[in-house]
Image (cartoon, rainbow, N blue to C red):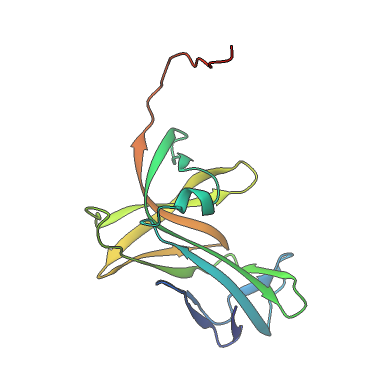
Length: 171
């Protein structure tokens, strides 16, 4: 993990690319009390060009957009992060704070728009939920997020119904 002191803030540089910036005095305990002390930040960047991405990322690239519509997603990269205090209790951002996620730009994955939606993985529903905007800045996508978890910079794709039969040799 990356360790930092909450009243100073911290930057976590992720293996393979990307980073997370946490401003000073922005963390709380899960019950909303301001937190002061040492923080362990655990994070991972998911490379969209990794051929094993669907095996290691949470869920599938299926989502609900801001209008409640089902969408498939074309990913440009995702970051997962969690924070905890020295005794292992989870920490979160206060209601007014955002963490800055810097998702590295990967060559060879096609045109990257100037802006695209950001998506949060809802662990309870096992689906991505639209929440915010990723903006292209040089060789990275930047998104500001209000809570720890898994965040994704993706272009939504219309879902299409498929009808058919599945036949098995033994039936």
